[in-house]
Image (cartoon, rainbow, N blue to C red; front, side, top):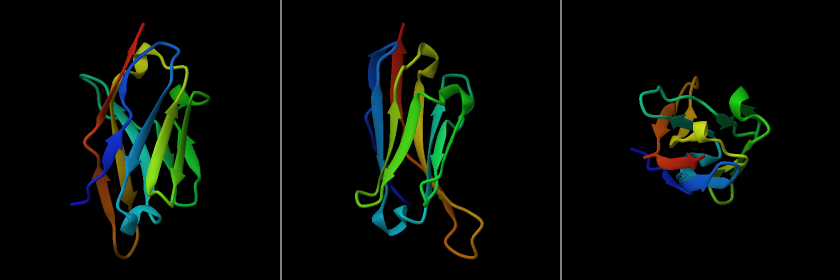
Length: 120
């Protein structure tokens, strides 16, 4: 089992910023797609941002212009910079690392989650 180490969650007022971090093992980081998936109480986990090994990014419409995903291959870490936070962004944010559709070494792992709470 691959361990992902997440950090950076917390309590912030609406309009504020937070930066989430997720470290993955160096043996797989550079060949993996990384993503962040928040899950609010009573709701399904949903995608907000992903980044490919080549640093191509994809965002949910609800966070475009506010959130930025980036990766540091030297530090084996993916980041989610969250600006202009809204109360509806409140959720447990899960980091994901995956490599799918290849002849070998396919995987899909989740972090333990980090709580983000935005007060109004």
